[in-house]
Image (tube, rainbow, N blue to C red; front, side, top):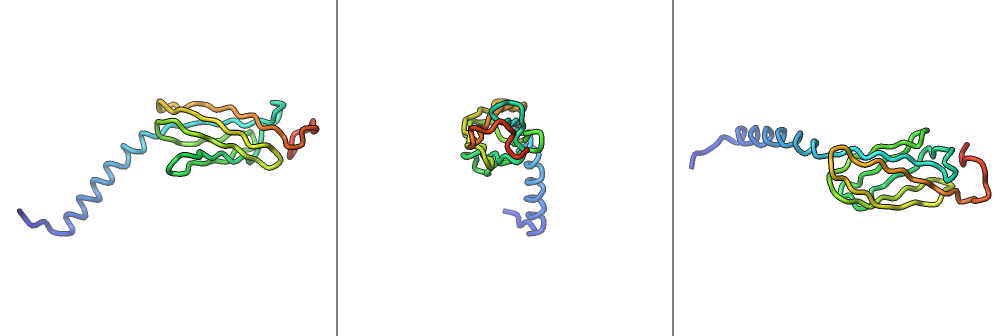
Length: 120
């Protein structure tokens, strides 16, 4: 067996890792979440989205329009959405293509007598 210089092995390993990185990134799908208050008129800003069974711990926080994006590989996942002054919502989603699903979530205010948007 021919001796290979240690620096050559290191360079080869780094090169292989760099080639493999784009392939794994291509497997991620974009999943969009839209989180609204129960009346449907108010987006929920700052809602925390957690993919509870993703080994990488995917999560996101909604913006002022109630919108957030999570990147996931193909598979079926459980999700949880929580926000201050709202009950937590849970569900499942399946990612089967690069164009991941859109998930619409409705959160119920903990003060069910309120007619106003929470946090508005």
